[in-house]
Amino acid sequence: MGQMAIGSSYDDPLRLRDLLGRASNLAREHALSSVVVGAAGAEGDLLFPEVIDFFESALRVDDAIVRRTRGRAILFLADVNGARAREIVERMVNEFRERFTSAVDPTIGLGYFEVTPDATEVSVKQVLPAVFA
Image 1: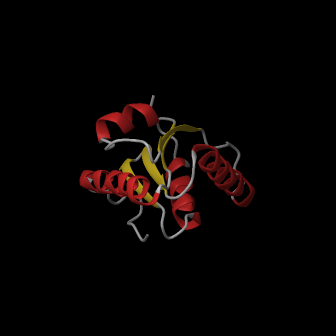
Image 2: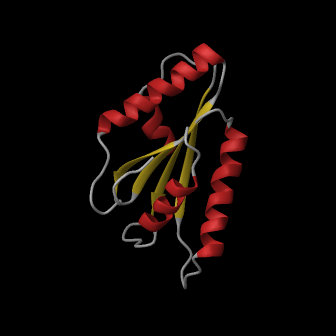
Image 3: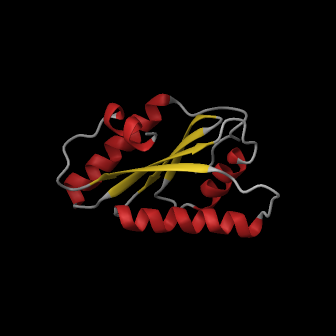
């Protein structure tokens, strides 16, 4: 999904609602779980936007990133459960560290919210506190 660089523009807040609606539909209509991942960088971490750009390039076509602020982003991983989402994110973090060695490792706080087939409608008010706790 081609997005603008993190420093130039942030995504429309309604985009997150659209992705949560998509997750609910996948769960309800196709019995597929999806995971919303909150990623937060340390305040002033200049490496974090680079990490998010790398994540965006590594995601599958069905996945997406919503950029909230310079230090926060939300990843939407379709058709995975919580354990698989953790594996995917861990792999991407490790690949970033291998490809872009730095004097300082990026500090990334991660939170996960799984949308399962038995879930009712999912709201932004449910997800944001869970992924950025």
